[in-house]
Length: 295
Image (tube, rainbow, N blue to C red; front, side, top):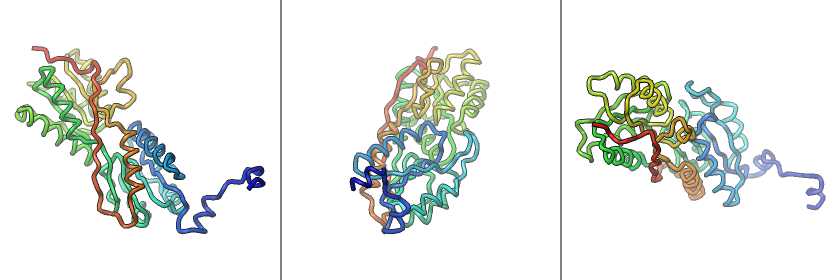
C-alpha cells in the first residue's frame, strides 16, 4: 500500500466495473450544461452523496445551445452505461431520454428538477409549484393587484405552474381575472407575451411567469412601454438579483432539491419503479420588480 501511494496509484473505475457487479459509484446525468437552475441541484446532490461516502461521476446529457432543442449525447450515455453505476440520478430532462431506459431499468434511478422523464424511476423530486404560485398571488393581492396575468412555460412543468396560478387566483376569488398566455421559459417569450398583454383593451397590473428568463423579457417590455406593471418570476436564477433587474421571484431551493434527491436515491432499491413524488417547499424572494397597484 505504501508503494502504491508512493507511485500515485489510483483504483480504476473501468477495471472495477469489469471485476464486480457494478462500478462502485453513483452516476449523475445533468440534462443541460447551460442551465443555471440545474447546477445547484447537482451541487446539492453531489455534496450529499460525497458526505455519505459514495463516489460520484457527473456526465452531461446535452450540449445544445440555449434556446435549441436539447438532444441526448448518445456517446455520454453509452460511456456512463459501460462503467456500470450502482445507481443513477437524472437532473432535468431532454426531449428524448429513451437511451437511458436500459440503464434506468437495471439500477435504482431518481429524477430531480423535472417531470419530463418517462423512465422507470423510484422518485421524482421537484419544487412545490402550488405552494410557490400561491405565495406569488398572495403577495400581489396584498399589494392591491387583481388583474394578474400569467405567461406559461412548455411541457409538464409549464402546465403544472399554469394550473397552480389558476388555483391560487381562484382561492383569492379572482377566477374571473385569470389570463394565461402560453409561451415558454425564455426571455423572448416573456417579451412577446407582455407586449400582447399591454396592447389589450384591459392590460393586467401584474404579470407572473413560469421562469425567470421569461420574467426578464416581461420586464424589458414593461420598461420599454413606460408603464407600471408588477412582474414576478419563478426560479431565483442569478439574473434575478442583478441590479438592473431586481426581480421578485420564487426560490425553489434547488440545492435542497438535489440533497433530497440524493437521499431518495440512497434509500432506493433495485426494482423500485413506482415513482414517489417529493415536493420541496419554495420561498418567495421579494425585490423591486413588483410594486403596489396604482389606481
